[in-house]
Image (cartoon, rainbow, N blue to C red; front, top):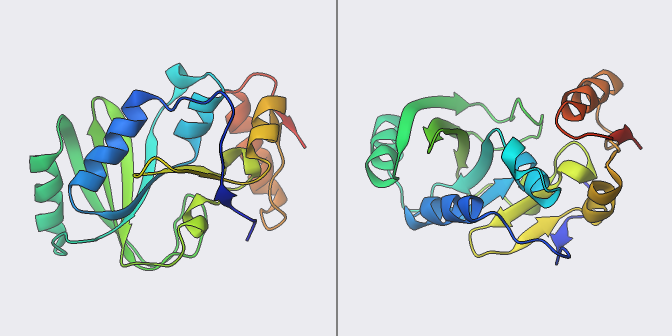
Amino acid sequence: MPDIQTVALSHFNVNPRSLALVAAIAALGFRNVLLCGGALRDDYMGLADKISDYDMVADFGTQPRPPDDMARYVTQHLADVTGMQLAPFPGEDPGTGLGACPGMTLKFRQAGKPVSLSLNENCGPMAEWVTGDAPINSIALHAGGTLLAHPLFEEHAKARIYQPFSDIPPARAKARLEHLQRKIAGLKMG
């Protein structure tokens, strides 16, 4: 796993909407709430208008475990939530391919943007959840306001470099690069 560390990113004021969403999920009683990946990358790169969704992870904390209770609780306590869906995951996040412990994903729209909140039972170091498929996608915001990122995140974001980690299959890396190039002008393979 790549080295993930607490970072101070130069000239980066996190979008207030991102901060509010992380704070709202944490206020519901979930632990280790993280907003991960693309929304923060886009915000950092001056592309906040292109944020299409929010990917989050958290431990269950003090929350009810039965899925119906969890969905009802979030819907009742988080403002402007629509389209709540629940999906159990068996131990691997299909979006990242990361081995995770079993839990559930709440998918909903909050203020019109899709949110995916993966919940689990205290599954280890937060750094594991920060790791994306490349340094440019390896960034997270903790509910306490701390930013975690790959040491090359800022350099790659500024230079618009997509350099997949060595364990990412070439076909997946190529597809991911093509997807990101539609959003990030000038992005190139590193």
